Length: 432
Image 1 (cartoon, one colour):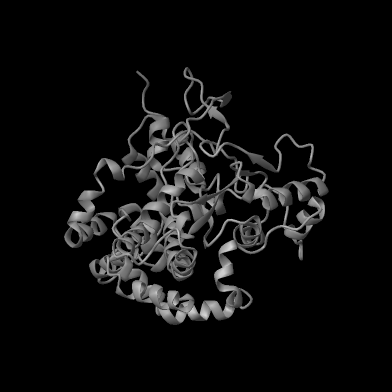
Image 2 (tube, rainbow, N blue to C red):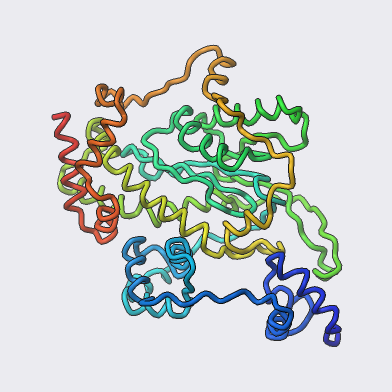
């Protein structure tokens, strides 16, 4: 039986690993000592983080954020939302859980049901920020003209961009989803998508810019198509069985991942449960009352235009909460857990990351190479040909009938549909 590790070796490991984001539990497991002992050393060497003061009126703040985000936000995600919207304050997990139990006991109990269990986590590896980006659409409500575009960083698991769309044309995907993220974060080493044609412009832009930079012969292509049910298929770093984590070099072993072991496909669960479920309930009410027919173009057009700003507000809340909540570590992978925003800072791109050139027009470049123009407007826009030429006027019209987006979203979460139905009928009356 191995004895306790020398105290100097343990102190040296703590000083090296804790600033890199390694947890005290992982260090204790690696060196065969108690987590409490590691925590004592962390405090003794001055590495303990400063504890922020607890937010006054914490219970009221938790209840307010739970109302705004909805019942499908659990404790971990709600903690992320609280950190994002109330920086500088501490929110003890036990007190947040107690406040939720007191305010929403039925909703908290419902999350324990099998239908609310998270999809199983698989094994995945990415070496740094922008090593791979995963882009996909959540199309659960596509029959009603509502699409959600998601772009996730593979290493940090940061949600780079979540956007509500009313069509999935390649031009829309590039202009609304990919280009804004590339302008903010640079280009990824590899963009991963399914085989849908809507990704063609974004994929072309990645391949073109990599070729111009002399990276067309690189071992990892700038874009990769994979089947939609397997949006990640990677080589996995697995430690040898006979070695310990302290002294073993990782061996690269090919492993075919199960269909659900993905980055962005799994994140679609978050979008569906936390954003699209309230909209689906509203659709059910409208259809039961005979007010919405998905086979009538003007109904779909009016509904999607009214719902787009509400869905976008829900996505903004989800993005802020997700990027500040603590994601669990991946099995067999050290240092794979943590808060996405912090992971993106602690594990930056090592250098040589490509940037989207100023005034680069990916759509124009693709059309030039293709030899014919792309479709720039959705067929449904024919129901609003006048306002399509004036998108600002259309946005003002939607804002006028919806009113305050924050209040409308909270009402949607509380299954109060008067404002949303009135806005939909008002916008629909323009075509009757």
